[in-house]
Length: 128
Image (spheres, rainbow, N blue to C red):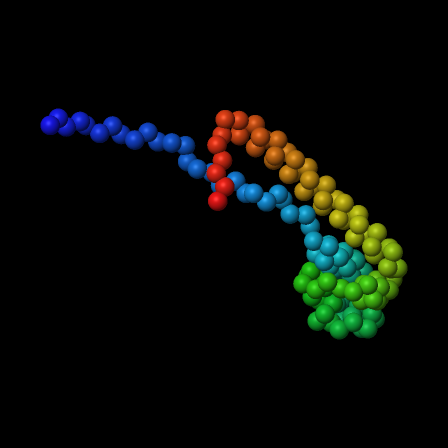
């Protein structure tokens, strides 16, 4: 019986994990919280001061600012009024921030998709 020397295995390219989910768009509650906090800090006011002026509990307003709670329209109107804004002005600020963040996410994901498409030519994908 002849023995054959085993050939060394060729080293295939390392596997890459490709996420199946697209980039996440920013959440409304996070943007609302960021805008409220930014406006409060721009006025050099404390969380307690704004919460008292809006008749909102301080812990709840803190959670709204951190994007942990979805505030009702009544709470948003009270927080806006406490900051000297109308609800429409607050929502316009939130909309502008949402558009800014969404366009950044969209541009990044479109650019990423284009570069991935170029790399994928001739590539085999397995989904589990």
